[in-house]
Length: 423
Image (cartoon, rainbow, N blue to C red; front, side):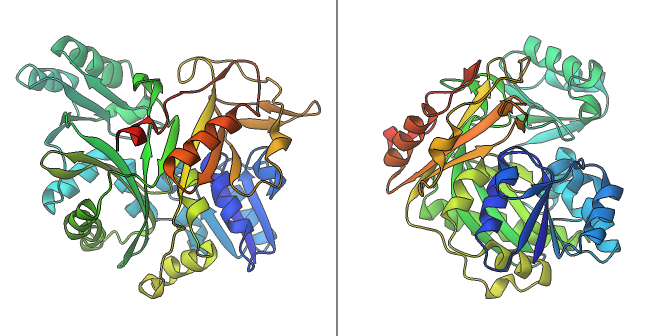
């Protein structure tokens, strides 16, 4: 089987690593990929949004399966384009990817089908949003409606901050067209948990839970990022939480999308808040999370190609999804200054230390291969990941492994998974 993966980040490296373990796969391509993916796949210089080139390449290379990893091409309708040409593709079509592509749509969906979430209002007009805020309780959450690389969310403690936030998102367009519409949401308290799932349009199968660290600085300070680290499973995702979510959230979401004429096939990421009043949906993503994929996929026992086939063919009910009884922790090595301003092009050393080490992974995100060697090429550079029998063991191994790698302006949080110590 010949497989093409679309994307260039740590998530796509984790997907490529899982695909490389399948005995059914002979050749892996990635468009555009990165330096790490290039070690196990052939990277091709085609951007994730160059739909025509992706279709042409898939035909020329007789690709048997395309896996779309990134949000932008999913929301933009790449799956539709490929399927129209008879190319087998994994991921939601455009009308289903709106689950992530529009926060206003997803909030309205949850409201209509009684799926637990925070109270909210949608706004197309900045003045109307500001008037609403003058009567709202603080703190409050502002969300750009569209895709914003995980950064389009502002938590505002005061009315002044909230008004500035509206101007930033809707008038100054800090997140581009994603901020043309605004969701204002009540502030919820509790533990955040991420749950990935495979979906075939009717059936949903839950993967292992994970917990992300979105803020740039230790102690959850600083700006929101695409994710500074992760661990799986989350000790806060109890059997009681699982039962509640299966009853009121997971299947309910799949059924709601089907009822709306938007059957979902692919991966649904559930961002959950475990509030004092029970689990609530914070957000949906229409693909593997990043860095959630880096801690969940290494623990999956199944051949990922078998599971993907079942999602596409509508036979997921026949799959017994299994995960190792262990733990995994990922620490992101970033460029200092991320997510605002940072330099790139620095040589990375120590990558060879991950060779032939079963419990350790170095997932590349922002890297590029040059004549001098592999250099930094983004804000989030590497996902240093380790498995262990317990979360504490995996955490220690991951942090030990961060010392194997060095590059100028290397930055990381030092408290990824620290919540484990509280359990």
